[in-house]
Image (cartoon, rainbow, N blue to C red):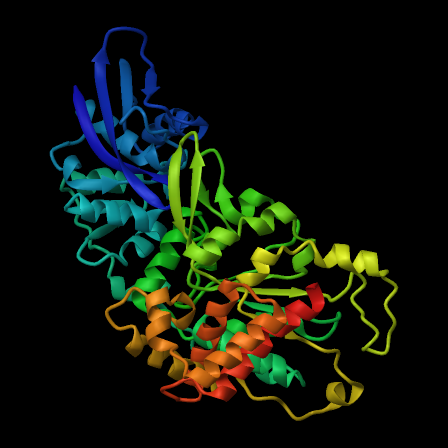
Length: 513
């Protein structure tokens, strides 16, 4: 007897439709035959399914049974096909009514006892079920909580194979998950994390961070050890505006495809991601990829912050792969299993020392690095990568007086209010456009929103020639100028706004020339 169950396979962050076909009653030895390009985890599902069937009170198949995962050209990976295979066996052996199987998209991993474990890609599976106009989706509880974020799709949470079979047989009712009750939509109650009030001194650096966050510009901090670069970076999320629902769905979808949402205790609240990979990370870990291409750190930072501490210590090849995502907001990965395009529109925040030992002599401590060592150290960061970083700011060493002061700096709430005001002005400016902030302006939008009078145009030209800046830096200066004007609630770019933007590009030429 033949049965059919609809499921999906994750490639990148997309779920591709998979038909689980189960045929029993075949002549031959009583065993399971699994075909359709399964990987090791999928092949192992045969043993899990047989054990789960027996421990759930069902009878394993007594004849040769063929299980086909179609289409055959798509490689299948992961344990999410356990539940579809088990339900297909039950329907094909007549132990349950299979009339309703085709109405739902089903995914879930089985334990040997028959209980269900969460699987990755729940939100992507839900979008697939919506696109295929299924009546609903049947998945484990933890997966259902993220899948329910998709509107107008009933998502039925099940805890075991027995419960799923009884629901499809009509023996028990199940209520779909209420999207409003999803833990993914919980909003942080208050600023209980790191706050900018804890940062002492560094007024210029704090200002540069405010400008960078207001326009989602990339930022490079250069300073000796102990100057507070990492402290500042870790507090950037506290001044970022919360994501809109569309942005948050993209965030959860990527995290779900990477498998980071399966642990219910680690689910992130309704906020932007902050990723800080170690400098020993591989190219694949940073960019994404693998045998079946999946998201890396730059995609996990989508709509949030990617912090690269000790920037020159990263492998040159790993840094160079950042060029495309910094320019396009996405990255394309080609592997033998297929080609995927992953979103990676993040704000890059990087930190580095000015010399290999961290000191230049201006801190009252002489550097032990030779000029040749300093040059080799700084040359690890290529010019094209520096051009894609909008603001370069110095973080000088703090004085003892600054460290001893008890007066706190401005807290994150006050900075965030100005950032949100500037972002609102940008949202109004780009209404009806895919652009969300000044850093993402197209050449046409730069011409429309960053027009300069003749005298300011000449000032910018002189600065470009004196600092030997590239054409890419020209556009980025205009974008930063527009953000500074937004913070000042100015409709036009003034001389003060332009000069401040230019000085954020001068430091890299002083250090790297």
